[in-house]
Image 1 (cartoon, helix red, strand yellow):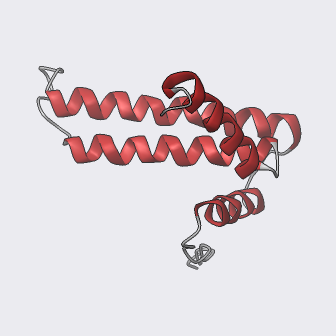
Image 2 (image 1 turned 180 degrees about the vertical axis):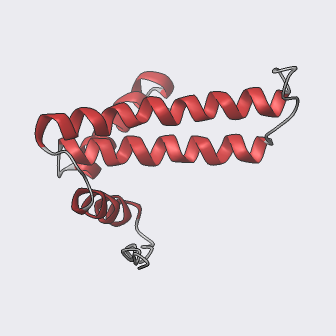
Amino acid sequence: MTEQATPLPAPSADLWTTIDDLWNWLNTHRPSGGKEGLLLRILKLSEEVGEVAEAVIGATGQNPRKGTTHTWDDVGSELCDVVITALVALRELTPETREVFTRHLAGVRERSLGAAG
């Protein structure tokens, strides 16, 4: 008997709606909830960052045993996965994801670029 895959949410044009949709979808398919689920969701970031490192090593051919195994497009894709995973983890912490992120980004912008930036 073949298992049928659960359909994914339709892509949304809005970043924050998509993050909410992904968060909801992941929560319906998670084996662990509560504090353990939160910690595992955050730990997922380490896995994704490791995949960025693997892609950079592969794009630069730094592993002489493997040679060049990735492209810089692969690195970009892995970086996107890090961003998505981080936003989903932030959503796990707060339903006010957009506001928290926007406020934090404004603070970083102010610190880095100043009022003239």
